[in-house]
Image (tube, rainbow over all chains, first blue to last red; front, side, top):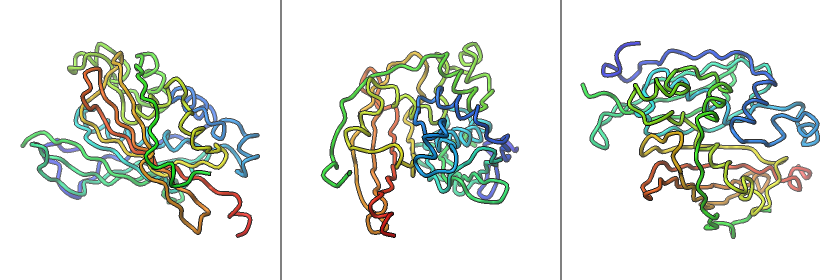
Length: 139
Length: 153
């Protein structure tokens, strides 16, 4: 990727391709994140609630999307990060995180880029859409 | 069920501290391998006093309060019918392992969609440091599937 100070509207961050979602990962994330909602880790509970299987925490997918940001920007540059959870992510789904520069503005005494973000599976279904605002180095 | 009378309900503030080991566990669970998030030496070399909190980890800290599900119980929300609709973070500065952070959550809005089949609850949480200075603001949109309406459909 080009240097951050040269980032321009329309530029894409390098895609982040994730390995298939596993039940082990959902169990680890439940423990690490503190979200113990059994619907993500207990298939009996999930079925009783009308779901065919357990499914991923939305926050797991958002945290993975966060890696797209930390791969390109220092953590201290992150001003805002928001997402809408559009579809359930299931076990075995293979996700791709993408980001493009939508806008660059001066705000808060610095240059800031607004990034359009998405997470899709291999069928193209959109799991999550979002935006982030990051501070850019001064040019 | 949740209705608009819940708007303005404020939860008891609580203070929690992220431990470095927990941040390493979180990094492993999400596949984050950048040294700055898992290695204190690398974090200090990058100018941090300790491991920095990665994106979204404040949401987990909010679940680390003395009664992590008090918010849901107070509102009578059943996990089996709960979906996470939206989540946002506004950061005022980087937070780090070992730093006590205070979380104050309130119900900002409650509204229905699809003729009452879905109820949306908006929770806004302010995160402040030991000096009372703002660290971040979180907004969570929860979606509750209402069974009675679903059966009619």
